[in-house]
Every structure is written in structure tokens, then in C-alpha cells.
Length: 354
Image 1 (cartoon, rainbow, N blue to C red):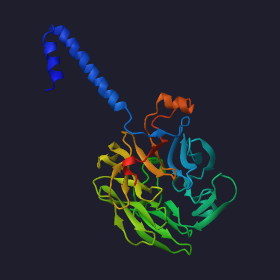
Image 2 (image 1 turned 135 degrees about the vertical axis):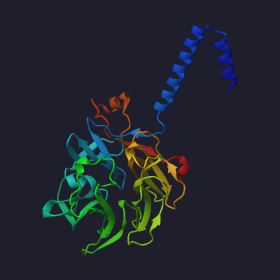
Image 3 (image 1 turned 120 degrees about the vertical axis):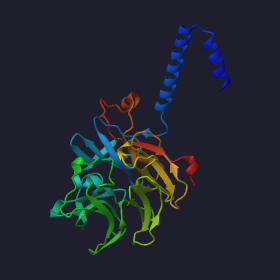
Image 4 (image 1 turned 90 degrees about the vertical axis):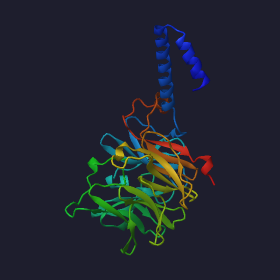
């Protein structure tokens, strides 16, 4: 018992019962108030980047030169891909309203993007200029239930292919999906496939959420293992499969740091509930490409996910964190959709920088 506690008890015992009860009530209220203030205080230094009236912005992708971001935006029943300034999150132009682009768009270079589309009578991977104008070119015709493609330097493609667990199931019902979760598809399993320009293909591994290393030689992805999901790394030719994480948790949505030394990923390992994953706490984590130095990047009870690092060193991610009145005033919006996602920005902790 501390000296302060002993003095408080002595002070209370010297008081009339009614007055002592009032003091105890006052102390209890102040302790609870202090705890509430502590809980409400931000646990990390993330800054809100995008905020539009009654809109959600998700899945940020910084351009190779870090000047722009691609984001998937949604307002009511409408969804589209927009290009934004990475400096302040302001929208620059609409890139695509193609429904297939929402889960498949990526940067080919600073000026061009690629995406899946069913235009021209069948599935294919297409490219266009990121300003949303001009001609569109088909890179390669494709087949299957594909998502999350990556274009390699030789224009071969790595993508996740969904395989139905029940042969009668042929379509993914997106209407019931949680937009935050892009690693599980009810009734389907998934595999990572490389599609060559000559039409041949090679299955690299089971898994989802592939991400290409900065040097273009390997990918990191997530693979199911019972109720857990771990991170793995493999060369783009299918050789040298390496497991990177191992815990009773779900480690998904991996991406590389700009210098290729770290893997960022979404995980519920800080507060895991494998039976009811919706109750888990989702944060951004980082791990060295050698599987060492596991580091938690964000700390919040909201859902933080889909982190990407730009060459400017900033980490962009989406989150449904609470938006304060000051944030609303700063971004000059009239109203914010409840439980909506927005793009946030944070830097790597100085202790992890090599």
C-alpha cells in the first residue's frame, strides 16, 4: 500500500460517514474519468489523410514515385477507383468504374495502371493511363476466377485464383462480403498462379494476397494453416518457399517496404479470437524479410489494414477509426458515413529503421 493510499484512508476515517461517502464517490468518478481519458487518447501517431462526405476510401496504393495514391472509394451503392495526391489525400481524377477493377487494380509504372476486366467478351488484364483518359490495351487474355493480379517486368502475370470447394458453386457473392476481408472467400480456396505470355501457367503455391518484392524476384503472400493464416515468401519461378510467420493468428495483406527490408502486414495477433475473427483487433505489423524483428506499427481498437509503403517512407493504410470533429472541420466535409473507412498515414518506428 502506498503512502498516498494510507493518507487517504486516514483522511476518510476522520470524516463523518456521509461526507466520507461523498469524497469516495468523487474519487471514483475521477479515477473512471482518468481511465476513460487514457483509453480515448491515441495510441499511435497515425494521421488521417482522406475524408470525403459520406464516403469510404480503402486499399491505398502509392505510385512508384510516391506522388499519387490509388484508392477504392465507395459512396452508397457506387464504387470506383480514384487517383489522389499522396501529400494531402485530395482526389485528382476518377480512374475506373469497372467493377472488376476494384479488387485488381495496380500500378504498372508512374503513369499507367493495370486491372482485370470482362470487357471485349472475356476476362483479361488491361492497362490504361492513370489520368483515366486515352486508350486501353489488353495485356493478356485470362480465364478463371482471378483476383489481386501482379504484372511482372516481362508482362507475365501472377494472380490469386479461386477454386470452389463445391463443384456446383461458380460465382463469388460479393454482396455479402466484408470489404475489409480480401483474404477469405466463402466456399472457395485459393492458389497463387503465374500466367506466361505464351498462355502457359504454373501454380506457385496455395495462398492469397500476393505482393511483389521491389527487385521483382519474389513474392510474399498468405496461406491458410488450420484456423491460422501465415505469411510465406517464394521466388517468382516457384522455387525456395519460406514460411515467415508462425502464431495462432491471422497474418494477411502483406506488402514490402520501399527498401525491400521489411514486410508490412495486417494481423489480429495483438488480441486474437480465431473462433470469432470479427471480434479480433486488427493492426499493422512489420517483420524483417529474414523473419526476425517482429514489430507492431499501429495500436488501435479499430480495424487497420492493407498497409503499403511509398518511396517517401510513409505507410498508408485504411481504417475505420473514429473521426473527430477537428478532423471533419480540417477536411471541410459536412457529414461522415458511420463506420466508414478512410486512408491514414504513419511512419515506421525509428527503432526498426536499419
